[in-house]
Image (cartoon, rainbow, N blue to C red):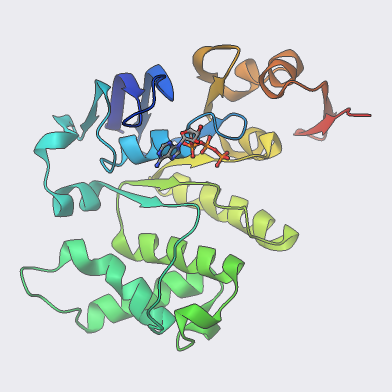
Length: 259
Ligand SMILES: Nc1ncnc2c1ncn2[C@@H]1O[C@H](COP(=O)(O)OP(=O)(O)OP(=O)(O)O)[C@@H](O)[C@H]1O
């Protein structure tokens, strides 16, 4: 088991904005590990994921991928190590779903290479894994938001990176699909995939994450073992509302007690 990605002293400020979105974030993730990033709206979770994926150059600190500074790696090289699934993915092109998923194979094709039968088979396999093989021929623009989210995750599975970075992957999923998705993430991690995800459901951090990074307006970034970091006190402080934890048969659920 090796370290896939390590970030040190990471900070990011949008041009023209006086205050950095976040500063001094340090984290690392290894093969087979699941890490959750938690924090209130607007705290900088998506921005952090973009920095980790090499899509937003940090204003402080450094990201290493497979032991090398990410800025020294080419796009295809990065894409063989990691993939980011953003919160929403807009496209105007009515590509069939299977084509969108096959696009995930791009980092594995040579210059001017086009996908072959093996790439097509991998794409269908990824759709099957997500339980959406029946959508293979549907135009991407004519499926629901939740289905698009699943297709984007299938695209990343077809890409076969070492690390999947998922920005609110359960945001558009119905209750059953959320549960299926959590089980899938657990299965993928057992197979050796590293996974970083953001969520607004602390329950999902408890259910999945080995470690959690908490971004809060009230304290510096805090990373640790999930159950040690996500105490009721810290969640209440982070979200600014009283939060109670309910423990039942190894599960933990959070209840916000707002009048
Ligand atoms: N392109 C941009 N230019 C300037 N400021 C931005 C830009 N994108 C985001 N921001 C600001 O940066 C901060 C962090 O945004 P970000 O989307 O990373 O937060 P988040 O924690 O992912 O939020 P949410 O949970 O609501 O998705 C916010 O205050 C936001 O207004």
